[in-house]
Amino acid sequence: MAEYSAFSLLKNALTGNRDWKPAWRKPDPKPSYDVIVVGGGGHGLSTAYYLAKEHGITNVAVLEKGWLGSGNVGRNTTIVRSNYLYPQSIRFYEHSMRLWENLSHDLNYNVMFSQRGILNLAHTPAQFDDYARRGNAMRHGGGDAELLDPDQIARLYPGLDVSASARFPVVGGLLQPKAGTARHDAVAWGYARGADRRGVDIIENCEVTGFLRDGDRITGVTTSRGEIRAAKVAVAVAGSTGHVMKLAGIDKLPIESHLLQAFVSESLKPILPGVITWGGGHLYVSQSDKGGLVFGGDLDGYNSYAQRGNLPLVEEVMSELLAMFPAFARVRLLRSWGGVMDMSMDGSPIITTGPLPGMYLNCGWCYGGFKATPASGWCFAHTIARDEPHEINAPFTLDRFHRGILIDEKGQGSTPKLH
Ligand SMILES: Cc1cc2nc3c(=O)[nH]c(=O)nc-3n(C[C@H](O)[C@H](O)[C@H](O)COP(=O)(O)OP(=O)(O)OC[C@H]3O[C@@H](n4cnc5c(N)ncnc54)[C@H](O)[C@@H]3O)c2cc1C
Image 1 (cartoon, rainbow, N blue to C red):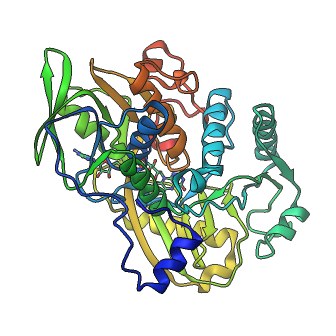
Image 2 (cartoon, rainbow, N blue to C red):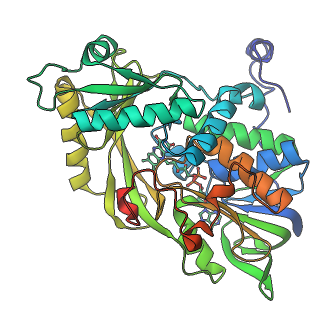
């Protein structure tokens, strides 16, 4: 497959762009594979890529019921950060950040990773103290964090009202300079191309409808394109986790499916230098390279598998955005959409062997799984290849819910809609 480079761009420009090849093949499924990955989202594709790249396991199929990018990997607000409190989370998300920093080179695909920083605004002294604690933990864990006062914030974000008379006065903020954004579709396409070129079969429009078993052991899947056998079956279907695992007879998991919406405005001249979050409620906004404001807020608050949200949340998100930047009241909203989130009981992910022999499970990404895409695939590939977790994902196995060793970053308890 052709390398993407300035030279190939020039060569193709001069020869009528007739030599570009599809980024991945469209193979028919083979009767059997060493590993089947169910779900062609970011996590399934990165898993297949690292299985081939890091472990030399190339007889792999990724089965996707729709088209690549139709799930959450193509629906998120593209924020990449590692500003966590607990050491387990910091180690995992810092590992992801290191993979992000070299991802475009590694994949030979420009994922437009842009480290423009994320700023969390604090509106009360208690919230600012909380951010100081988190910033200290981040720095102890080898990450980057800076506390900013309102004057420093005003210099970074001139549109923000930091005066004492503001509706929600800004007390300070926590900045993670190396956080940022990436182009979400490019991440899916880049991993797909990288996996395909190493021999992985990416099979779209192939829905897994059941699991083949030998006693308890999973030995393959039934799909809309026939039966496929495999020594190992790995499930990475995000918001569809409950539904797909039920096909294997697992009907109790610490996961609930919830809706999350995203919004994009018309294009504006550059106004937001980075990602900024509002601490008075739950609102995050950045500006895409095309100029649109990309933003979102809370979950819709009820369980659903529908990939669309409802109006009350639209009103809430708009009012939060305007509380932060009143000048955006004149900006027109262009598009909105929804995705189904796999919310776990402690707000942290699950990357695990089991729960049945021959099966591996990756889920519980809540609404923060895009930034985890590289580390999730890297750790899941290790777990599948070695039949045990890597030390980075060892704290994130399923049995933590039995053992009571939860990783509850927000301290919310087992209330998935609040994580
Ligand atoms: C509106 C919104 C905003 C978000 N913002 C951010 C953000 O700013 N930063 C961040 O880090 N995260 C964010 N997220 C979360 C992030 O997008 C997800 O956690 C992550 O993408 C989930 O992993 P995935 O990419 O593998 O999921 P998906 O892309 O959903 O992949 C799962 C795939 O499984 C497939 N599938 C399901 N059932 C079957 C079946 N039976 N057979 C075969 N295939 C099947 C689906 O079609 C889907 O393609 C956001 C999510 C949404 C919806």
